[in-house]
Image 1 (cartoon, rainbow, N blue to C red):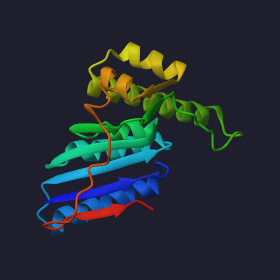
Image 2 (cartoon, rainbow, N blue to C red):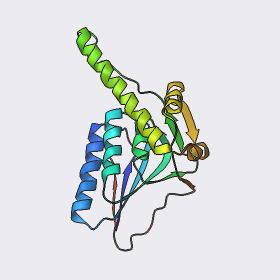
Image 3 (cartoon, rainbow, N blue to C red):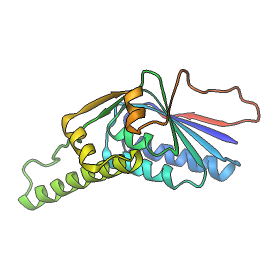
Image 4 (cartoon, rainbow, N blue to C red):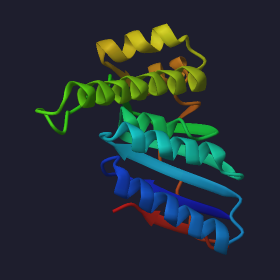
Length: 184
């Protein structure tokens, strides 16, 4: 049985938590053997994107991610969580270093140093995930993020982001029943 999930909003703690909870519910109540995870997002929180990437990679079922529209920064991490990755023709992947905000601009130097170390860790994790999943060198990925790179589907396939380019979303009529949820 297949289950489908669609994430089309910002990548943040709440939508990621909702996605994981919904997928868990599907897995524990139905005989799910495959998850098709559709994503189009302008990105968001890198930690949340990393968490959902790691969750998708750890699932004991087949996970296919399907990108459409724009898949930006932390959403790219989620997209890379699929064992099989497809992109609808015209999908755009946008890569850039994270944009960070210090929550307390008047904090102590120690607090700023700690925050900066977290930002650096997030960047290194992003570089590592993209490099590992695409088969590219970490320095090449780091340079691409520094320069901010937009890739259309063909270039994304050549880079190793997606495995195939499709014309339409592979939606099917419900034959034996499958779960589908669109993220809020």
